Image (tube, rainbow over all chains, first blue to last red):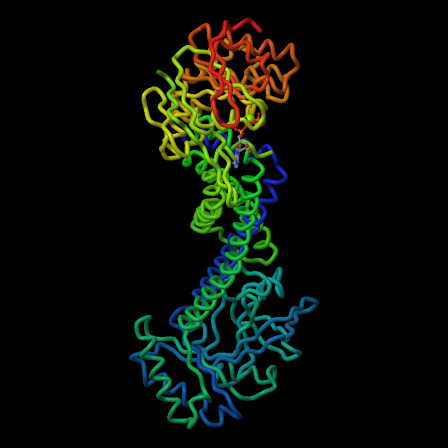
Length: 392
Length: 230
Ligand SMILES: Nc1ncnc2c1ncn2[C@@H]1O[C@H](COP(=O)(O)OP(=O)(O)OP(=O)(O)O)[C@@H](O)[C@H]1O
Ligand SMILES: [Mg+2]
């Protein structure tokens, strides 16, 4: 018997009992949909992560100093001097003070944002582009002048109409003068990388309430000197601290690698769980196929009396199992793709339905039908025609 | 000779004892005969029919079908022989409920791998022969018992078999419809088909020209008759 006819017969018998077929497929539908949703979301998450890290610059090296009074051991000036000395591997250095939850106010407009304290080269190191006005300079940093540069979202929110340059704003009640506005980097939305303000690190002390500088950002001279630069920084800090746990030097690329590793493991675990539900789906198919073989014993006997060979009977049941399972796979893909987009929207992730995941999910569901259908199909094909014909 | 049974026995072992369902049966049949195998319940009729129909093989003895020894073939070889040379007509029709009439009749041709155009032609001819040309698209449960049995006869005919084997073909029908089915079988015989009819009912057996009577797995009579119209 030709494959196509066997397939047509299989479809007929599936459509002949829709409810049962649907329930049979359910395990596969859930398994496939789960795989697709999970893979899509993790994909989306890691591509969002990568792009936000890349926007920060891959040459960026961050240094954190822990423990009590980190800056009493190593002063910002010492690190800045070190940066100057190692021009061969370092393009720039700046303290990096982060103050969250600062209230910025201009007239009746106000918002809560993050203020970064840095040196005059902070914007080069962090890849910020100044759109209007300028960045603050060395003299303003040294003189602890209360000036600031606004992120594009902050500028648009505080100064919806007028030009912010030269205007005063109040940060937690302290008056700062706006000297520049940055170009939008991350869509210019709330909570994005554009929702921030930069000020001289010497001038953010009133906001942070803790005088010290415990983080620095460096930029490596180029991408290839990142590792050499990190080694040089480690060496330098080792001269100050007895304990290497007192500081940490890390790079965006390292972080990204770590995150990718983490999401990779996460994907494996999640897909593993989904694979178990596919396995359960396969067992469901085997169960129903065994019932179906028993129910159709007489039919098998009749087919054998008409000249069906073992192979014909086996093929019929195998194709039936594979068709049920593949159909379940297709429905699962549709549900999974729809679900990915929906959940992605809800979680503000760009869910990426990967064609590979779809392809693999489909092949796996066909394979499940064949593997779990084989035992019932073989059992059917070996029935003795006389006994089968006598079966009621 | 189309069928040669040479000392065929079928022995079932049950516990320590054994049942000789067929016990040294010998007979032969020529192409074009209409034979009734008769006997009481348990006499071995179905056992003989299963062997003749290549559904089963004898425990001992030889069975030659069209000159070929069929006594010890594999499952699949037997299936091929059934497909090409045997047409079964069962007491309970045994149509496949989810296939329509034409698809049921087509089934043996699918298993022989025949091309579509020829299949359709043959199905049409077989249905015409049993007078059901207009019922091809009906489902089996939309037909009367007599019509279903005619479909099953069409399904038996469609491969142009060497033998049509009918096991109590009228058993589930009222006497009028039973007579119609018998006269259809006689007509097919007059067109040259070899027919073996299995029955316990001598009245029905009267349709055949030759009666082989079984008792306890043995042939106790083998006689030529006129073969009266039922
Ligand atoms: N699979 C089997 N195992 C054991 N004994 C069997 C088997 N099949 C048939 N027999 C026995 O063989 C004998 C002949 O059975 P068979 O079915 O050929 O009778 P029959 O003439 O067709 O009877 P009926 O008219 O009731 O159909 C019976 O005694 C039966 O019990
Ligand atoms: Mg019987």
